[in-house]
Structures are given as C-alpha cells and as structure tokens.
Length: 320
Image 1 (cartoon, one colour):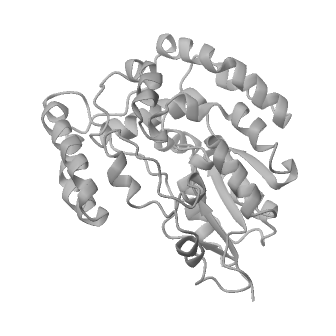
Image 2 (cartoon, helix red, strand yellow):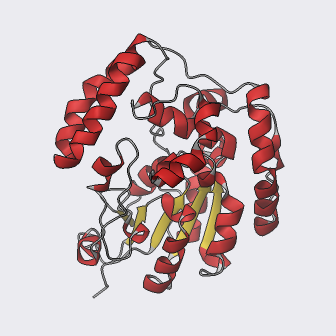
C-alpha cells in the first residue's frame, strides 16, 4: 500500500497563479489535491508556526497544519492510482522548507510558478489592502516598509519584495533538489495558453495530457479604493482579525465577509503602476532576474520593462 504523502508540490509564488493551477490539476481524474490547498506543513519543523504578529497573521496561523500525522491524513482519501499534491506557494521562498522537503520527500516533483516580480508585489499589496489588513494605502510606501515589518515579526505574506526574488530562491532550492525534478512555469503561460500550460504540468508529473481544458480564474480581490470605506472599515477588519486568533477560523471568515465586500463596494477599477512607479522597483529586481535567467536558461528580460501587465482578468480578456 502506498504511503500517504504528496508526489508533487506547487511551490510558488504567492499571487502568481498557484491557485489557478491547483484548481486546474484538481479537475484531472489522475490527480488528488489536498484540502486545504495550502497546508504550509513544510514551513514548520514538526512544531507550531512562528508567532507572526502582522495584521491577521495569528488568525491565519490557526489553519497551518504542522503535525505530520495530520498532514499525511490529507492524502489518505486518494485512490492508489492517483498522483497526490498540494500547493503552498511560500515553499519557494522558505529556505527551511527546501531542506525539509528534500529530507521528507526525496522523490517529490516541484512546480514553481513565477510572475513578473513587480506585478506580483503590487498584486500582493492589493490583496492585503482590499481585505482590509494592509493599513498603508500607497503601494510604494508599503513596499519600502518591508524590512521594518520583517524585524517586527510580520508573516511571509508581507514580504512584497522578498517573495519575488525567484533567482535566489531557486539557487538555494537546487542545493537540495535535483533540477530535473523542478518545473519553472510562468504566470503568463496560464493566461496566454492555459490548456498548453496544464498539459506541460501534466507531462512533467507523468499524467495523461488533454484531459483538462480550462483553468479557473485566479483569486483576485475586488479593489478597495482609498476613501471613507477604507478609513472606517479597515481598522475594524484589523481589530477583528487580532481578536479572531481566539475564535475558530471559519467563524471569523463568515463574520468578516460583509466588511470586505463593503470595502470594495465603490466598484473601483484595479489601478496599474505607472512607468514612473515601476522603474525603481524594476531596478531593485534586475540582479535577481538576471540570476533567474541564468539558472533556467530562459529569458526573463521582459520583466525589466517599465510597463505593468495588469491583473489576471485584464490579461485574460486581452488574450480572449
């Protein structure tokens, strides 16, 4: 009988399409994926997660699965012939996760989904802002607060810059996992050629191709335009998230939903970064983009453009 552990992991990065790829693979009859999608087990070391202290961090940590028996139980319902997987995008960022994965799953296959690091960071900020958790209304200001927040003990989700340094992350990962067991996919593949992208992932995982013909939309949030709603409802959300560490997570999600919907009730369009806003951030990532290109033998220089590519829905509409 097969052991109850994953055969593949979708490891990164946050806001780069991992949810969409996870949902697409879940439609494949030869695949079993975990519920929850992001157990975060390999971010821990068979011990409770660190005591992160950013807005909402302690609430979300209640859902981390850090006990090995509980993690293995996620895959027990799979049929013997199914390939089993989970998708925790923070595994790509976490150096500790690289070691733990290599030790616990010596044959596992990894799919790293990467996105233009500036667009990814902006989407990351917008996700937290529109959920009422990010108190800083200006993205560039929030981006510059990263190191202060790291020192204050904020969770990985707040590392707008650090989560997008894929070159450094892959270089470290390759010290632990053979390169032929790592597939690097681009966010734009999932939008421009979704069926081809899923088939590429299936081929890498040894699955039958041609059985999944759609990729569900990603988990983008409606945008909360700065104004009276964010001034009034944002602090309520953050205060509630702090108190929610003492309540079951599903109760907090149910309670906060009307507030999050209210934040975006103005129907504002998601803003893009201007070329002037992008330029300094592109410079900050240029060295890592060059490293990523070297490691993968693929050209990522299009990420050095001063033009933002927009959100998933905008890009998918242009493709369609």
